[in-house]
Image: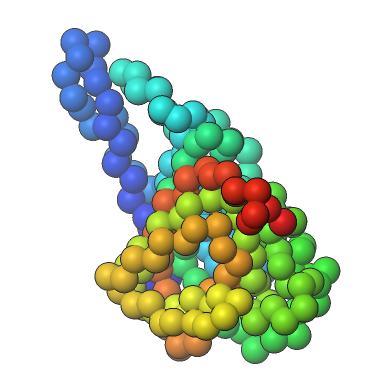
Length: 189
């Protein structure tokens, strides 16, 4: 099911102000990051302001490519299909980790270069992220400690350095809602 289509239903209003289904179909932006063993990003929607403007029938705000973080003052929802960790992941260099995150406009999010990184794709963003596991399981790896999350579990990620490992033999599908945030001074990198 890892490559199964993610369906997006967008609501709006007709010319008389009645609620309608404006769009119903596969998400239009899908991209695998990090080569054939990397995660598959299904970009569902973004907003580019808070509060988000609500009009009658506009579509998703235009974006080029895939971006890890949400727009400044905005939000993002995506579904990720994360395959089992490939054996070569353990040998990832700092340059390869930065290149992986550069594919989603976030080379500086990679914390692989920090001593003691516990996973090749450890990273940190200035966001609040809600991660909802839809199927399968992942190991959430922190600087200190780790835990396995399974279907139905919800992670509230608060700008912390972390990595995701799929140590199972099956795909994990997880939905993320990302909200632009701002580090307090004592947490700034």
